[in-house]
Image 1: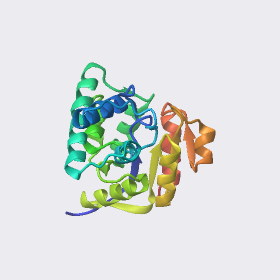
Image 2 (image 1 turned 30 degrees about the vertical axis):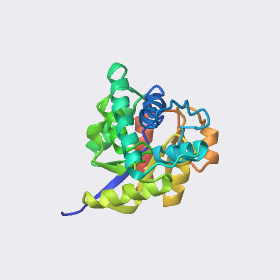
Image 3 (image 1 turned 120 degrees about the vertical axis):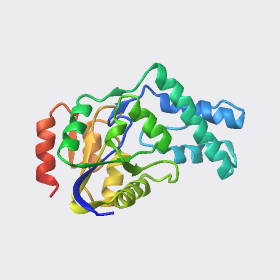
Image 4 (image 1 turned 60 degrees about the vertical axis):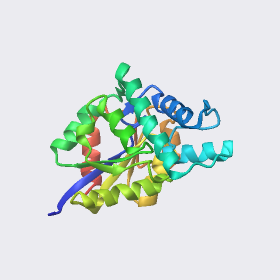
Length: 231
């Protein structure tokens, strides 16, 4: 496949593009209960910036469970089924300006990818609930990696497989937690911190954000920054 040179922007989903009403947690609780036979409210787990694989690792450690890979896949499949039902009644809500921002980036030929702790199926269910799935053809997901930096590297590999040349100096990552900032730093790329939820702009700057915004309302300012930053 012939490669094409693009500016590339990688996005987290929850809190960065969408508010999904905490359904990710509830779907995880239900999926886990379906396979293990016991409902666990997961009060000992923080989902903000976490990854589905790491959440399951934390559950296994806390409950002293050993789950075979086939059981892990069953849990993930059930989580996706539960999430689909939850979103059917109440779709996600976009972070202000996200749709117009994605549209403008796509129109400009920017390659858009995902770096998310969600398993692939849940990522596209969440995005699809508001019609954002059409913007993203590649990404790194929480199915196979517990560590977000590894997920970010998987996204770069997926871009190359899709025929996209991810050029040095022409890529950035957008997220809403210190874990996203750390993933960007691990790749050595600029990171935009979206202070839309649990973490404020000061928290994100302290964690390594190159730029912070409250949301995507100032699309002109964001596009100008990207134009100057990504070469």
